[in-house]
Length: 298
Length: 298
Ligand SMILES: Nc1ncnc2c1ncn2[C@@H]1O[C@H](COP(=O)(O)OP(=O)(O)OP(=O)(O)O)[C@@H](O)[C@H]1O
Ligand SMILES: [Mg+2]
Image 1 (cartoon, each protein chain N blue to C red):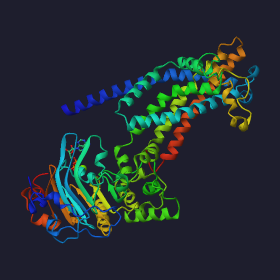
Image 2: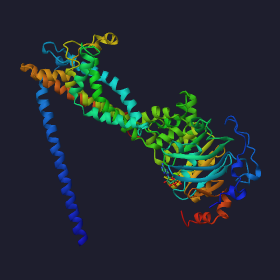
Image 3: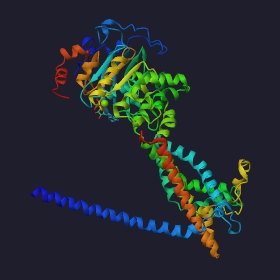
């Protein structure tokens, strides 16, 4: 009798705790759902084929801003990926050295620096056409540098964690085959960690994709297409010119006195969220397809 | 505590036992080593030693794990290393391919002589040396995100072996020898981590023998497996010993009795007894060996 009573009581307690957790989940979901519905109800109205295709000139569309956003992110990844990989590898291979601890501290500090400060910093040493600066002017390059600085701590630490999560025995298996340490790290460990590294990269990209503050001081805005085809892009000239981007459109249009531009700001905001979601979901789908699936998990 | 056989036969002369002047390379495998017969650790039945361990001491930091081990391993045979948990079996075989030194804080002294060459000699590149000494680990450790095919091919590919029919052949041959081919031939290009534990361990054996080493170190390769999988691995070892010199670490007394030509019994970092498996099991010289094989401790 005692036994059953206690079992009933225990089951009762379990139910209560589970119920409370479910409640907490719902509370968390409310703001998220509210945000998405506001975004959809306000933004869907301005979405149209011409909105996606036309340039920002006279508020016709945001085509150049979409392309601009992708180009800035691509260029930022080009800067951040090799650096972040190198840092992540260093932190795992020489993790106990003083330089490694110093870099970890530095990365932590860096990740705490507000994005706007990074923008001002790049403005001062890259954009500005006077004083101690590279005199590049408002440009894709400057924007990408700013974003890559924000990405770096996220991506480097993600790489470090991804590599650390690979069991030591995998390392030893590689060495045991008579492979030099660099081959084991670069060809086996990096690859073994690549699903998590990729996830880290796309988290970092998603994190900076919506930043307007650093772009305010580095890319400015533009009413033109960032480049006239691949040939033009190959000359790298577009990299040194101002460029339009979705966060900047959202920023400029929201503060605009014109109501039709305010409406477009919602459209651009919705696109931005869709873009970030697409990035996330496609990485998930890719890693699941490439490394997961029926016959194996990673 | 002075029971390693070497010392019983020639007390105090162990350092002189170094069999031959070092050969310039480790390539000339076929020539037997001229070991002074009266001084070898294993006087009976003897082909000369393939691996000669002399005064090997090893440990981690100030914890000394191995206390002056002396042991001769004949070619084309299975030699079992037996002993209770924590007695230094893994440490011992990890010294033989110098994987031990890759662990942080690990150290070793003494000599491991392979075909007349001291593997600890400064002129020996551990990376080259490990190509000749394959290793199978206590727990299966296939490379994550690598397919079955890529796992087996990894040692060859990353050492510069080209893709193509020849590589396919080597992969198939290795998988056949590891008794895994029939189970995986239709799913070579799926993840290696998607196999069962026993299949993964055979995959790791295939990976180790694909680079055609001459020595195979197996650290409790069947400790995580069921009796059927264990039996297959034992059959495989018996099969492989026609070409390989195999060192097999095992907890399992019956396993040593089933597959080993010679057996060594370790206790607390000492080599207590070493000789033909049959002798060791039927008429152990040391009371501690007797106690261990009759299951009275360990
Ligand atoms: N990385 C390490 N750092 C410090 N001490 C270690 C390390 N690895 C092993 N040891 C110690 O060395 C001793 C021998 O360990 P080893 O792994 O060689 O034992 P073993 O005979 O293989 O045991 P088992 O049968 O459980 O695998 C143990 O006391 C262990 O605690
Ligand atoms: Mg062990």
